[in-house]
Length: 124
Image 1 (cartoon, rainbow, N blue to C red):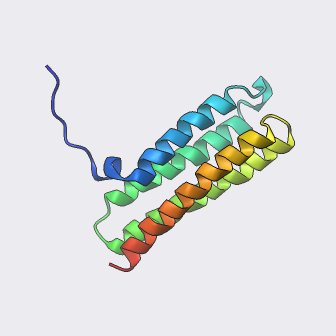
Image 2 (spheres, helix red, strand yellow; image 1 turned 60 degrees about the vertical axis):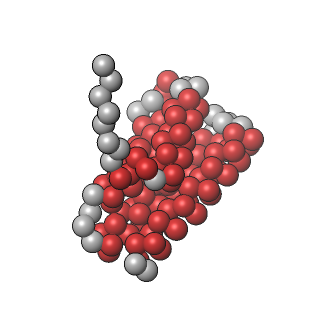
């Protein structure tokens, strides 16, 4: 028998869903990196990507709009950290220009969603 478990607020957000999907892609891409990068670039990129979803989830639990907006800002910062690191791995030829541009496009879409989320909390 399957239990009917309610969703948490963050699970209903498209920005969280899209970032969760991006993390899957980040894991897939970083699995192709040389083993020597396992504890540096791979770890850094994955942590930054995971931080985005973590901050979205954390912000959804906050009681005030100001706190919710703050967590959206933190998520945005982590998203840009991840993108900056992707440029480094592109320079190192671990990912192609096409892969970088595909991930950048998704990052841009998520950044727009995060800004909209932040603004919806600020101007409540």
